[in-house]
Image (cartoon, rainbow, N blue to C red; front, side, top):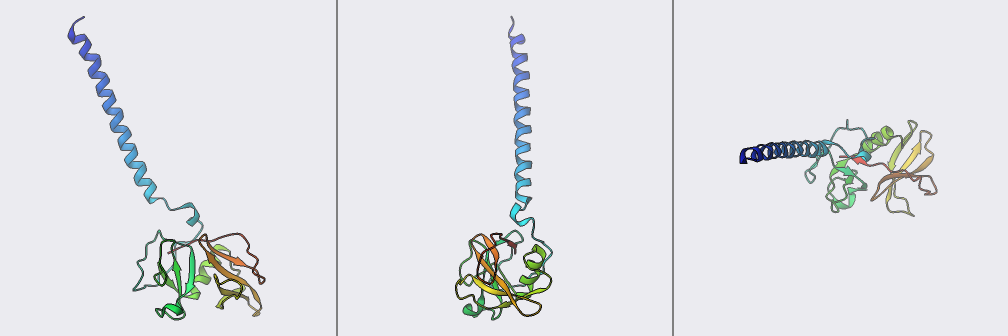
Length: 170
């Protein structure tokens, strides 16, 4: 056997190996870019067609998942406004500042609030995480809107948790 007959198969093998390596690298780059653009599954059920309320203290990102809220009256930043916090936000520095009307529209979209119900500010004495009361159109209390690290949830008038959570996008 000559050296030429041994070199030719090695060149073919090396060329094929490099091609496979380049194809794999290209596919990895494509899939990494695709994962960045895909929104989280928990936010898929929430509408993204919302108007944003600008806040001087908040940087709004369309991919921010808002998991809890509190009234900003104690922060003196926006009296009568709600601060919606992402998991990494600190007190008085929410990712989004919005009105009770905005929250009502978002909860109606997600099905947590019925068309004959409306919201109002009222603290629930037994649970400080519940700062919004739900009323029926006749003015009868129908429950509370509360928040925890897993999102917003609704309770009945006795404070019984329904178990389902909603995470809004800011």
